[in-house]
Length: 637
Image (cartoon, rainbow, N blue to C red; front, side, top):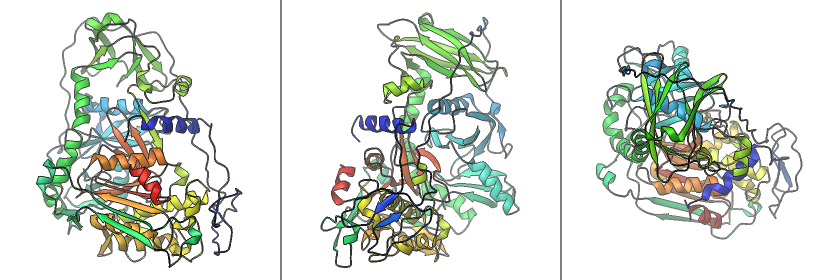
């Protein structure tokens, strides 16, 4: 992804979020020229005969861009810092054998607490976290295990009014492993499902990017949320020290198709394969006990690759902790507890002004303002003294006082940044999204008729459905690609119908077909074959549309180039992409290039448009659908 790619899209999306851009009507044309003439929907889900001219998307869908709200941060007189030193109090630790439920946030290490609080402040008031304008951490955190590790591998922090943050405790995963500004947390969902089955939760596990499980005191699994976790067979440890090979399949009509009205059984498609076969398989586990016992061997190579991919983010966190956070403009350090006192020490203390800002219901912040132009960085430290006796030292390097260079607004349109007055604590270089939440399809993985559709089939159904709905909305360049979804999921010359938002008999048919292309069924459970996700999934467009499909995969090992293609699709071409995160397939439709975290916002179905933000440094799979073969060349360039 080329440098500066996000800037233009960021400006456009922020403009849309502030109300400068809107959408009207929902009509797409299925005529020969692929153009649309506007109009309003009738609220139903009509289908068209081949000679009909229009398809109505329905008038009940909210197509307005979400509003952006940023709260004011009033300034109040500074709190006097204490004059005497205080000794360090040991930070309580929580072992995996302690209380199986939540633990008071005071018993979680300050480093983890700080990381969670910093994330909230970094995204507060931005499109990356709608609804978190007044967010704050709850006072209870939940520990999670991983079968191949001793002790607590992750902590989940609940957020009010809603949402959650999951952080890795060490380098086995990304510092920020999963978060979502909306919806219930994994712990709440696990507890609810355990109660439904008459069970109780004793221990929680995080098994993959979006996969969580809980067991009772006897070690029996009582609940699971997220996609199923399968045994990975065929991974080779030597792949860790070599560049993982990439296999690719490209599917498109041999000749350009102006409109999907031209698609018939005579139309020929090119199906091009390159790269080696993916000799990796996913297989069901026989039991929860077998999963735990075999997890280390099955996921060892993948988890080692993820740990390596996370090194840079951990290095940035550690560098800031040891060397200091560079500031040349106002910086706001959130105070983790009320009644916190502070000292400012070091050579650079005389070149900054420090005061506490009371934000009402939000946690107060310590605003640090550089006051002098300096020839070179000068260090100083802020020492925080918490009511329970613990102490935290946050190091800084003051580099000058550039009032016009806001640390937190890099990559955001300057006029909008100034107008919104974002007062964040870490910079947010770029954010973009493909469409709005109302455009996302909400297909249930369990809606397929012959077997439960696998994650790969669902992800591609969400993408194909999204693209078809753009045609219905008359969104260029998708207008002529109305044939991606036809009545009851059929092929040409079946009558046109827009891809519904929620499951139907037609989406069941689509999922059945995609499941046949991407995997197989074992005891009614759909398993996704990685090689079929590359080699077969594009065949869905054959006999339906003039669209093109580009799918690429490694042997389930993350690769930066695949991440870049997905980001390019979202940010430059306003189109979601199917990605492989962990060992899971999901649809990514938002992209956040932060510092240091880089993340995708994903949808995997199950009746909601967002399962949260997940790490996006590297992915093992990317699949894109394009209006034409030439458009795919632009996406993957």
